[in-house]
Length: 378
Image 1 (cartoon, one colour):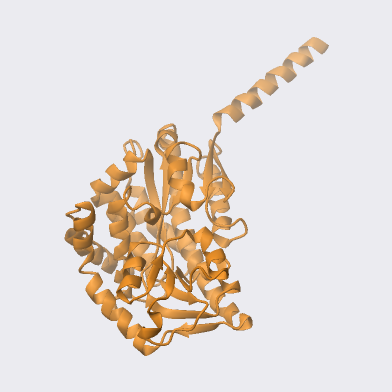
Image 2 (cartoon, rainbow, N blue to C red; image 1 turned 180 degrees about the vertical axis):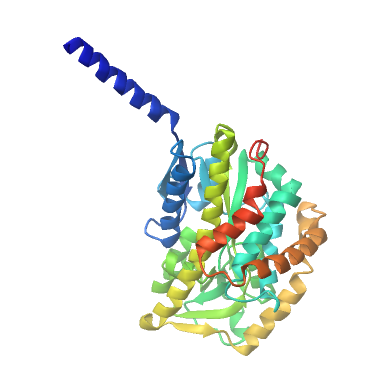
């Protein structure tokens, strides 16, 4: 009897081990701080992967402990992590096509697209364009041994400063942290000095006076602690939004069954919606907290806003030529036209959205549900 009982226990243990072995655990390297709102949404994303795959795939999130944003591309390319939020603006040569498209986020500053929810529309527009109309993007991501699984857009970029700025002349010589080519170009045009540093280094840079201002979105004002060191936040310039791209190691992706790839696509529809929406919520929260910190938070002067609008009007027509000269990309004009048309579509689709669940459904129905998981990312 004892021998039979031991055999039953051993058999049950083998069944448990077999079930556990069938579950594929993926890792997500997050670059946001552990207690930030985006990291909380990554944890929800990990839970959703398990739910949508019926437990066949699980995910563990490593916030800043596995890879920083600056390390994420090489880390996922080389298999250190399976998934990440890949800030492609940090890698201009590797992702020139993606970065050109992201620069068209300045379209949200145009009157017909502007508004608090403009990031919802640009997220949908750029995802639809990349997945359906940008073979060069797919070639670039494949060359990095990764698969593109969507993106989120931040709220619009504003100047967050340790020093006051009232006039165009006040910008002259100011050291401004620039997150990518658009903001660097803007800084140079207005006579400021663009400084390249990762988002994870910016708080220290402001605190030590390495930079006078950061051009950052209104949510990062809270998420990365800028609210604790800056004294002024100026809305209305320099504008545009940062595109946060989600990528996965190509070998890890193709190690999944088609059904589990579909589960990951569904989970990414949730992630893209959640992160885009949480930036809006964090932006609102930062505005509410600014007065208690003694921070001057509000629109920039009329002079600065007028200068910025003039810059955007000229720059949106120059992006294609800039990328042709630098990277020999010839699709700039075509992309500008397509994204403008898509912004019209997506502004209509998202203008009345009231929460992330509604946004997730729109992204799923319009984009993710139309992807053939059996061939995508091969």
